[in-house]
Length: 227
Image 1 (cartoon, rainbow, N blue to C red):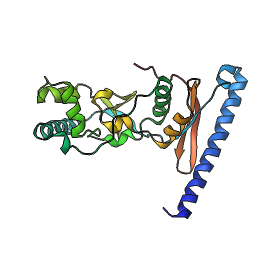
Image 2 (image 1 turned 90 degrees about the horizontal axis):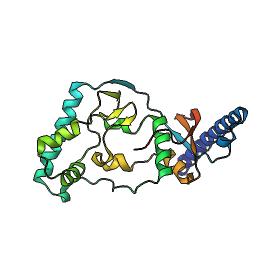
Image 3 (image 1 turned 120 degrees about the vertical axis):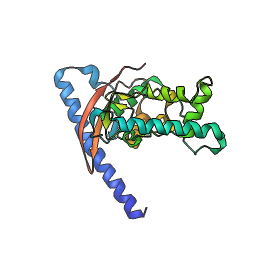
Image 4 (image 1 turned 180 degrees about the horizontal axis):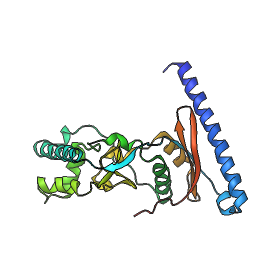
């Protein structure tokens, strides 16, 4: 990037942040009018994220077959190779504390998984993912491994989106997901997590639409129940 493009990117980010600040202040004034001081007197980290404009539809049989064929192919590759042959992927992420987990849930559910939508019919699975799962379940044969991944496929998914992307988020257990699914944090989410602490009781989430933001709202924690 040139110096000029960097300055322009910073200018746009500052403009977005100013818009979000105005929206957050307006939301807090509305809270004042309701008399709910418990929500006003807390820190509200800001997350500027996209919004995944996808519809919930039945998971097509062709998509299910394509995905399970990929899983079977990955299993076969794992059987005849070693870990040294695996594609380079992100390392396993550090565990998030309770507050960070709730901020992630509040932010990602508002976004509806824009980044997850790129999972398509492959769900970002790689040989490393299957190798780790197979090592944790050595008694499973190839058919049982494929069936284990098939068992978590939802009947209805967001389309366009990942085969595991259902109405309430990913249906696949974290231990079976790829490293990138567990580790990836978008820029807006990272900035919110930098400000979150044990006293954080909510996050202000706004959606980025080009050079504007919309849909800003206060989301008190927890938005979703954590297992």
